[in-house]
Length: 322
Image (tube, rainbow, N blue to C red):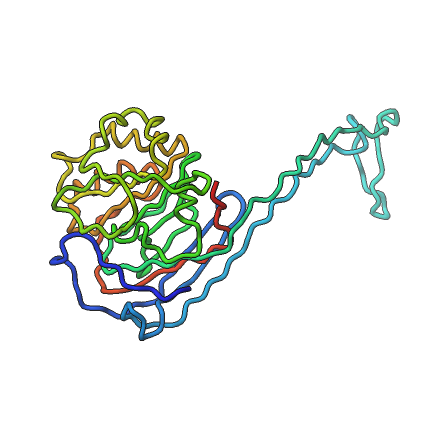
């Protein structure tokens, strides 16, 4: 994996601990939906890297679950109304009506020849200075990255849609990876992704990503509210960033959040970013969880503040972009 550079955390830097602390072993688990499972264990790089952390060398391992054709089992070949008994030699003998000894024939039907999914072996690394924490619930999440043994980054699917949940707004579009993350998230056949982001106000930031994107302030543009079909037509990726201290004032409405879930249900792709507790208050956590809880990655009111550390995911089966 290429050498990592430290990513600045978002929000008011005055609330962050700038002292770099020694990181401990971090663990990442990737589970491909329905067809394969991969598990990776990673530690921070050895001393001397740009993150300023020290630790053991990372390693990863994975196993893929193989699918098998269904098998059918018919009833006892002695037929209906007969029983089988063991004689003195231990051999089963038929007892009952001799006219029913003819075995019944069963049609097993046609077994479908389903090709295995296309799996990409790749990996990614994220770096953070300060972060919130995500939970993992349900079956939507297929990969997570952990820092200090806490989940801070998760990839998943919601119906035909795809999403990445992040507990640090400096992570989206800043992963170091040989996985086609943006192509997978966009799901547009490999073309340039059309991106919209919203949720932050003037006091939020600083913005850490450098990708062409349309910005919309606190709210989803009015023409898309309640119209997920139009939103999917105009944008391949929507990024929602939870702002600080806005819930109940300038926070997006419930209808805007429902539109985003409907957008995923129509095959859209999303980044959803929470932040560390303290930058976000309880009401902000409640706000972002209107999205993250249905997706199975609820934000928790926790603050991980340790300096520079990184986390890795080694995929045995990253889904091929569509």
